[in-house]
Each structure stands twice: as structure tokens, then as C-alpha cells.
Amino acid sequence: MKVNRELIVRTALQLLDDIGLDALTLRQLASRLDIQAPTLYWHFKSKEALIDEMATLVLAEAAPDLVPARETGDLAAWALAFGEGIRKNLLKYRDGGRMVAGSRLTNALFHETTERIGIHLQGTGLSHRQTVVLMSTVYTFTIGFVVEEQAVFPRPGERSPAYDLEQRNKALDAGRFPFMRKAGAVLFDQFDRRYRESMKLIIGGAVAQVASTA
Image (cartoon, rainbow, N blue to C red; front, side, top):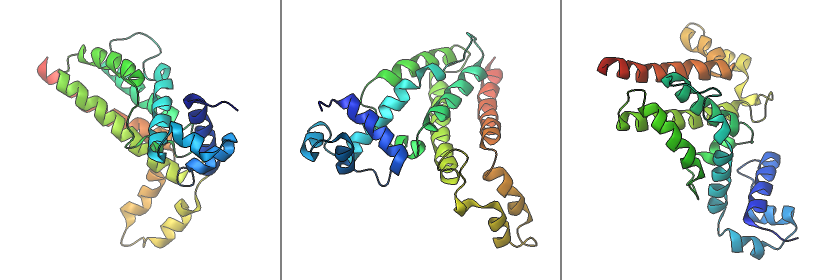
């Protein structure tokens, strides 16, 4: 079978769903592609280089989800679409958050979208620096959020036994930790709701910045 970089990366994403990030190796990928390992090494010298390419593809293909569905000049709509679009696309893949965290982009396709988002956000009254800080905050928060979310639910709807809420509460004395016992239901369940609430707090700070300089 003739292989190219795109075929390798898409097959790697399929393998990621099957075995997870820790178990993913170049040798296993070569076996899935039915090629010799040296052939794969010719395209990717290391697992890290492969992951960079995987993350780049995932973020580039997320482009349609990163902007509001309808044209608007609303700051909140653009910032929320950016974050929700990233989260949606990372959740498509097992360990998607960990895969993208710390990765380096191998082309400028994702930047084409972030350029458009940045220009719109700056047009709402934010300075260039404030816009960059807002976008980077949304980006890094969302990746970290997904990493934690996928620790609890490695696959959609499948909770890890390590995050059983009943067992967690049994381990926390009600007299000493009343606040943290109640926090479990917020931290380890209903992630959609908590993500929206978190983004509202982040975006609220940006909106306040614009209002203070108006």
C-alpha cells in the first residue's frame, strides 16, 4: 500500500481511538498500515512529530466550528464559538485534549482561522494585546478542560471508575469537607454546563474591559 503523510495521520487518529495516546507507538501504527517501520520513520522521525501533525490536522479541520454560525459583531459570540469549537473537535478523539496540549503546529491552516477571529474580536474594542490574551486564555482553558473531562469520561458516556462520585464522597468526611463533598457533582459531572459557565466568567472579564474603555 502506498502511504503518504495524510493517510498516516488519519490512520493514527483511528488508532488513537482504539488504544489511547499512551499506547500509541510508531511501530503499532506501521502494523496498522501494513508497512515496515522504516517506511513510517521516513515520514515521521518520532512519536512527538506524529502527534504534532495529528494535532495540526484536528485543529485545521475544526475551522468551521470556531466561528459563529451567523455573522455578528458580538464579542461574546466570537469568543464562545472559538472555545466551544475547539472543545467539540477535541472530544471527537480519545485523549484529544492530551494530544493537542503542548503540540506544535506544522502548517498555518489553523492560523488562517485564528487570524479571522482575532480581527473580529479586536474590532469589538479590545486592544491587540487584550485580544491575544483572551484567545490564548480560551484556548488553553479549553484544552485543559478537555484533558480533565476525558480523564473522567475516556469515551463519551463511559465514566472512569476512578471518578465514581459515590466512592469519592465516602472518602471525604462530611464534617470536615462539606464544601468539597458538594463540589464533586459540579467538578465531575455535567461538563457541558460547567464549560458554558466557565466561559461566561472568562468572557465577562473581556466584556468588562471593553466597557471600561468605552
